[in-house]
Image 1 (cartoon, rainbow, N blue to C red):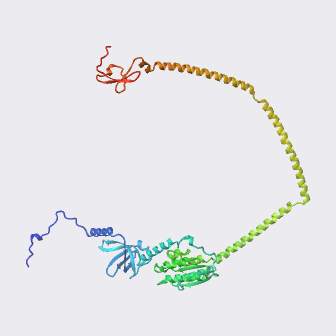
Image 2 (cartoon, helix red, strand yellow):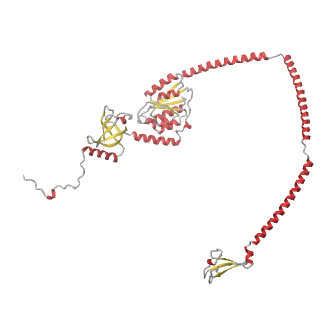
Image 3 (spheres, rainbow, N blue to C red):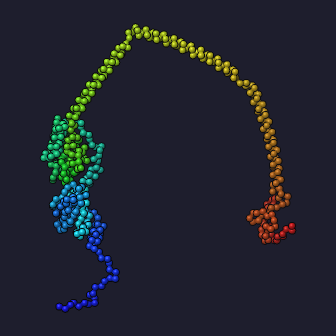
Length: 458
């Protein structure tokens, strides 16, 4: 074999400034950053495969569908908040961030949240129905009814096979064994369960055998409890004539029936406790009230007995009472005579003293009138003298002003010259040939032209 001939056009051409050479680590990190920046958190649905829970608490699994698969990891900080642990073959939806595991260069997704497939759609339907019924007023607090304090009969709407029924019955037996209990059996899960639950509630409403109605079942997923999220159940609860307590699922579970009911209990057992007043507690309370009433009546009787003894000691014979009143009347008559005489005598003495003081201090009106007339005469004379002096002074000032009046000077043949700016001309140096000046006379004024100016000979 002959070596291949190297033609000039087949030789490699290198750029003058070649780019920097990346390491594999740098390349993987750049790709990971590129994926994380351009693909935000998103929901991905698929089937769980190869699920592994590491000793660190992290979850590793593969998410796949019929045509593709992707590796996934859910770290312990996020996995601890999941409400279930996935198993092989589970259909799930995950909220994940697309990234790259740099050490191996594996493309994977970091899961932030996980839920069973279909839960998202169910929850959205739950929120839509809740908003609709709330807008119609089905959840208003004004519509809620109070529970009877001592119900005679309690109805239960649940499945006969439900574990919650045993808890409710045992609670009612313990708290109120005298209360009659009626079970309205129904399916609480599965196809058509919502209509069956509504039918059971409607039956209890039509028969009106109980004072309060419990609608309950044990916990479960949102799919298990979905029958209690149906609109027909909520409307039947609202139209029920007796108060309804909803005890569905656990404390963290909320259904449409919970909002429509008159009272929500966190668990079925709590619903039974709310419905039935504890007989023993009220018996003890009644016994305490009975003892308190007895003690109160005893103290009242003792107090009234003491009052009766005190009144008996104060009670006198009619003869003695009349004698005491006669003495009291005589004393009052004597006091009245003294009270009438003493003020009158004191008033007369006071009047005499005031008359003497009035006569001593009575003013000399005639002398005061003469003094006032003399003051008026003197005031009038002084006023006239002052006016005459002011008139003479005013005349002298008028004469002086008349002498200084420029108009009188103009009437004697003098004139006032001023230039075009209105300034008075006092010297020939202020005049310019061929200029105009204004002349003010005693009567009127004129403008004159200057033909020539002669300087002063002084």
